[in-house]
Length: 163
Image (cartoon, rainbow, N blue to C red; front, side, top):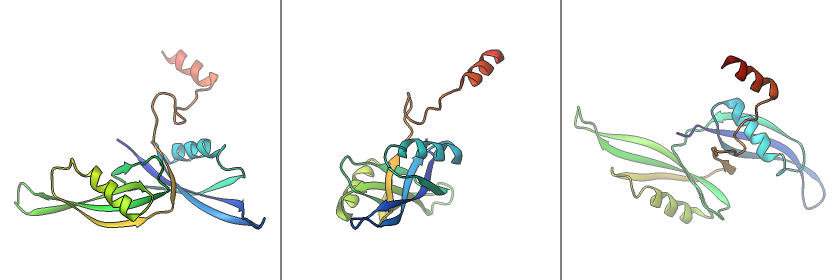
């Protein structure tokens, strides 16, 4: 299960006229805690952003699914309503899900969201699609990705002494 955090950064960037201008960007990071999200973000962006940057905010992202695309330029947030019947009362209940979809335009986001919902067995409706300021999504990669923390020799010695 994913634990998504939205991380915001600020840095100075040169525009086409040679002037420094402040830039704000958002990233979605899969991590276990706020601290790990910040650490993973910093490691991932060290080579990407040439100047120094500052993490200005981290918040828990309420996302149920992420639908990536290879060459997509934008991320869209889709509000999906799933309709189900409550077994006890027999009344219809609505469950709201948030899906983050990578696409080049609104139509592509709608098609990707619909494709990801094809296997859902209950009736659903897409109620809203909105363009986000998310630049990139960083999922957790088991098996040696940037999310794997390196243990120091002191930590290794401590673990060995406890066994």
